[in-house]
Image (cartoon, rainbow, N blue to C red; front, side):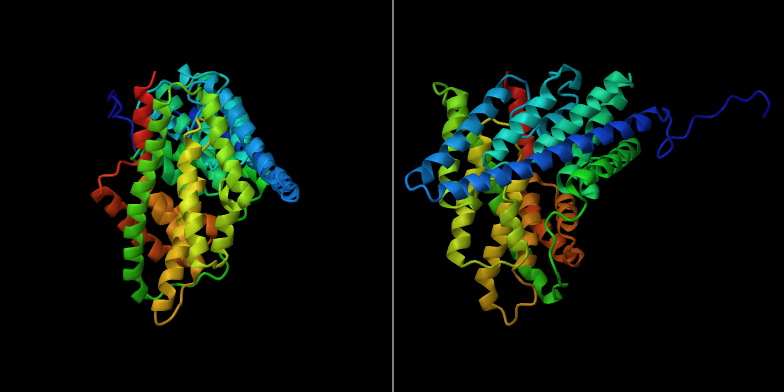
Length: 438
């Protein structure tokens, strides 16, 4: 009608606030892909160098033990020294991304040195062999780039916070070449909600990041599983029990991570750098015995997913050592994440479960690689309490779409079991601990 006032602007998937944030997300996402891809490339070169050093040290008699211990101790100490000078640089950083979304922390209060501290400190810590993951630093660096892009372009505070979170998800996608995993991580773990504007920012930021990172690290699945078969329906109860056991194992792993940090807090007479060096020396000793006992665990996960089937005693030994080494390495207060070591422990748990149960079954239609893949997702779900993210991450990393049904069943059981054991999701524990500390 003439003279009538216009009605309210539509909301939902329509954009009532303009498109400037989406335009900012494209170059910022490209920068996330460049930084995250470069971090992955550098870590791969560091792993090759570490392997060369370990191989050379193996033929030096008594120095066989000393050189890996000195290498890991020096890397851990240097990384701890760097992280100790920059607020929030130590640890995963995902808990800080979540705190910013909940407005418990302000992204504008961070140090401008956070990104270089995460990059260099993470490279030193993970590259020297600590049992830490690349995803935590890349998520935190991606979120940092998002916050800075929002500040420089003078986005509204709400959009700057969304961009901070969205590019954190783009960082996770870059870390594992898993675009849908990055989106689900934002919705299921960080925000625990689905908001149209945030979803669109994450989509465009992730697409931009992966378009750039592929030139540095490629776009193939991280852990391809060859010839994965659809498991028979009669195996689903087996995966249900397997997932429940993974949930109990995840609750124990979460408790161990928090417990190791608490022990470190009580050792007030030991300087943090000295504590990090001691932890590095322990990990170096493990690597001198077997290189697969150190690092993020990618070679170990890759071998198990490809169908490697070591003896039960060997699998149990790897599982026990890496189950302890991951939380111990996280207590070194260096930059580094929890996901990659956690996935390796899950793969070991799956391979061990297969080795124990396969002789008892009338047939083995699945194979150890499938059990390893399901174990990765189930343990992730039990620790992080983000089952859909775990399922999609594993499917994108392995390409094993045939395993979706057992993945869903096992992750359901893992989350239910961890909840019944009253285990708090790990990033909730870490975020509360971060906020309670000065």
